[in-house]
Length: 64
Image (cartoon, rainbow, N blue to C red; front, side, top):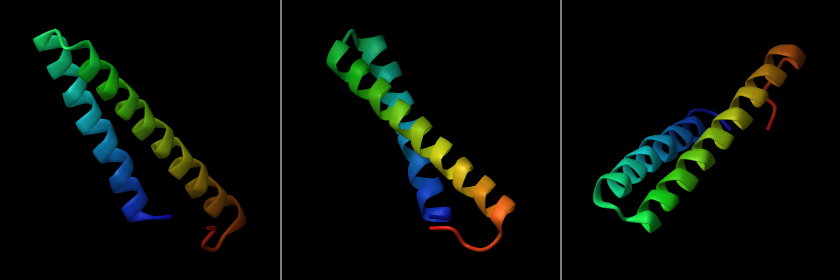
């Protein structure tokens, strides 16, 4: 939990988005799909981090 997890989520979002755009530009459906999946993984990780932060705010302490 924490900064490393948030950075990992952001990395997946950015790299996934870049792969998806590159796949669209080159007509590579496999790369486009891989990028879209990686971006969605990053979105999900980011959502989990937001939930963890909210729980920490509500209940206090460092929830892992």
